Length: 577
Image (cartoon, rainbow, N blue to C red; front, side, top):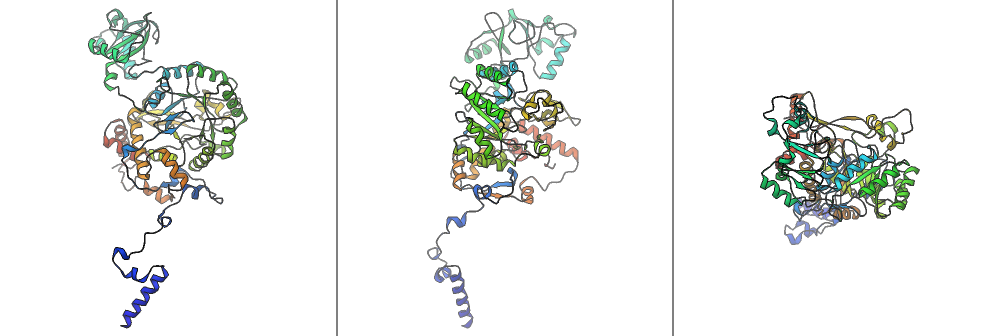
């Protein structure tokens, strides 16, 4: 009895201390249980405001410092919409923008990324004429037509043609009068024509199929009509020629078999693909802007590592006065004061990031910049109050980083290294000693890029001594954008689903209401969240595993998608089996 009384007293004391009735504590019936806890007590983690808006916060955070906490799922991954803003008036169905770097974005990349729902920015390390030509290729693109086929002159030897076939990967070539697109078509040479060639020093004109025997289509032919001509003729290639006999396009049976409908393609009101272009802040760049606008460019990005300069202010005001309807993106900025100055100049979008790219050394060389997660959140919050979307530029090496950028308020992510190494990037493939296929990738602040004109981006055009703010290197082959980007998109959809957001707009509402929760990660937590616990037997095994993952990325299989997404940007950490 004494023990029972003691236990009863202890129970009553515990109930009193926890503010719960004693009879409710003793009851095992659901009716006797305490009411559900307050929602505030169930809220794990912290809101973005708790982390970034603290007045005494002295730390800048990167994407890897944060982890998003999961929410409640009541919808399928197919219900997730990824519509985001590139500028005030340009909305993307895929929030991915290819960076204006000379080893990332020219016409081929801009076409591919626009077909996948994003937009490409043609770099400015080109002459005005060449940059305009790249923009026009995108605007004139029609799905199914090859607008810039590799042409050869009739005087090229068969031996040289063999070398061209091996380096380009193409088997058939149109033969034009001067070897350039737009000149008079003289014939077509294919692998079948070359199979029985004996004299390798003979010109291709001796074995090509002459134009008189070719089946051709007239300029202006519709895609369906061209498809029918190819099928009826049973030919592998269909040249499209003008009334003067000049080559204007080419169709390939192989491309038709691979040709797919792109329902999320980014198009203007005339159903043309959309494209942006980068310019500098020199007086001569005003002529560049005029030429690009005449070519039909949809947006201009002022390309500068430090965007809050009097040179950019003057350029922005001039463009807005000269071309009021032109969409203009200013940057780069990382502070709210910088953002305010550019918004006051009339920008339609902001590019956020300084010194955080994988090939950028600005923070190391100049001791200036900002951790990207802190920069994106703070600029996005301020710019939102002014009705201006932002692009998270740099620090993106995996789909998870894109998800975090969107969670912090970005309208889209600008990607350089993530897209580098794909088939659509400029440059030729090279092979390492181990046989791995690589492509060159360099920062626009590297000495190599500065020699081609990008030094104006770093206010060094007049300097006799160049100070590099970037490096050059190589990246591994990632296959085609048309296979790689869909995997990124699927990863983004799964990320938003896990968070409990059905769209980027929903995600942003959760961010600013405090419903979206984050936690800061220790170094151990970051290691735990990556690939770990595997044993590498040798460097050769590691190289083999990397090559396998690269092939998986290029192979359209479910297993390949999982492999590619799990690898992300941490290939250097991935330990071989």
